[in-house]
Image 1 (spheres, rainbow, N blue to C red):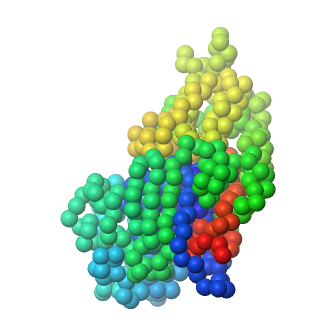
Image 2: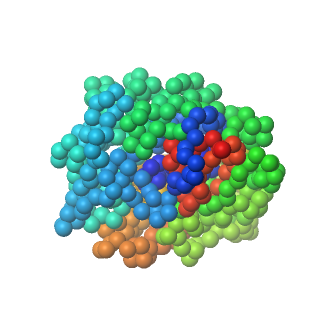
Image 3: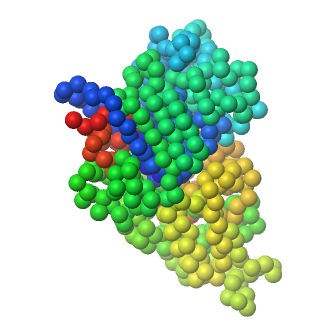
Amino acid sequence: MTRVSIALNACVALMLLAACAAPAAPVAAPTTSGPKRGGTFTDASFSDATSLQPLITNDSASSTYQTFVYASLTRTDPQTLEVTGDLYEDQPELSADGRTLTWKLRKGLKWSDGTPLTAQDVEFTWQKMIDPNTQFPAVKFYTDSFSDVKAVDDLTIAYTLKEPGFCPAIRNSGLPGPIPKHVFEKVDINQNPANDQPTVINGLWFLKEWKRDDHATFSPSYAGYVDGQALLDTYIVRIVKDNTVQTQLFKTQDVDTATPDPVDWDEIKKLPFAQTFEYYSPAANWTFIGFNLNHPFFGDKRVRQAISYAIDVQAMVDKIRLGYAKRQFSNIPASSWAYTDDVPKFDYNPDKAKALLKEAGWTPGPDGILQKDGKPFKFRLFFNSGNKQREQIAVITQQYLKDVGIAVDIQQEDFTAYLKRIQQTKDFDMFILGWVGGIDPFATGNIWKSEGSQNFIGYKNPEVDQLYDQAAVVPGCKQEDRKPYYEKIQQLIAEDQGYVFLFTNESLVAVNKRIKVNPLTKLGIGYQLELWQLAP
């Protein structure tokens, strides 16, 4: 999925489920002859949003649409990676006792219907987010950060920190939304027309038309948008079958951007109309195969380690990504300040895999498939349809596991049904997915802490829970002082192998030269879309 527009203005404080590799974000480009208004930009994606309501989703496709229509409270500077205000003023104040973080909204903000945007909208968003009746899958990420969020007056919001001196507080205070109180206070937040057809917004784009699984068309927002109206007249997201179709449409100039598979990258770079970008973001997209730890086969750590040993991940990097990826061994990618390479590694070794499986009680049956207590080692491996990379991972994994006596039934389904399976019904054995990460590694705790709301695999390690809590309240909050906690977390999670960790994708992004984009920064090229324009 292309999604040059992926970047949440807070730069993904929360971990997002990735439909696929997703670029992110530059800073404003200086213009020499003044901005040029008009024109259409056509994006292409093979995963559609599930809802435009930010309080009930946490997938990256939905996040893109949501950040079109709802401006964020905070954003990340693409050069310094520091958090600053967007709807909020530049910086907050932290009380002397480290318990209260206070932000001020910019003066004069309004919703698109002319209603003032106030601190009461932010408080309302918080209250609805934590309401047990709201089906927000990442609520614990925020309730682990703050015990309360209150409007002090029309412009002032006070965040009460769950722990004094909580280091990720500024980054996490972006919250989802905000959403307009006067629209949503008397409706069911989970099901109402405004969720998918918002008419009162404060973002860059109005939703003009949305035909599910086909296209969504956006037009410039009202003049009161906090960062100024978009220079382009129209932004279209076309939903396509897969990356191959997306790339072909870019070649024929029927869409203006693509994130090609590596096999097509050299050809794309030679196109006379293509401007291309390669980068690793600090909030990188990474890919994994997840275990259901409540499944009777996968509760034994030796079995999980054996499966990791059985798969040649470096061969996947070479074959699927053609080297445009980095091998990943634990839960924090190498592009993060908290990364360490000093973790247990389960590089390809089928002999070790077989030995561990034997130690765990699995022995070959008459058909060559391992069995234990009369049950064959057969399981289902899920991935979302339309994602060629994940399909290749599934097929390659199936073959490697067959070589050590494990039978894999590959199953694919559309992204919406797939997310429901992973997040809600938990009806899976193993699955292939990716995360678009947060710049602060505290965000990964929502995946790995025992009660984390994105902990879909059922991982539990009390020491990991404790280390995440300790890392969040280190006095002074310096990265070098927090890093040792995250290093230990990575070591424990790698040892436990709740995921088969695969690789961090390098972002490969092509945009038609007829569009003048902003310079490549640490966050990519999807930042400040209001400044994108037709090239002179």
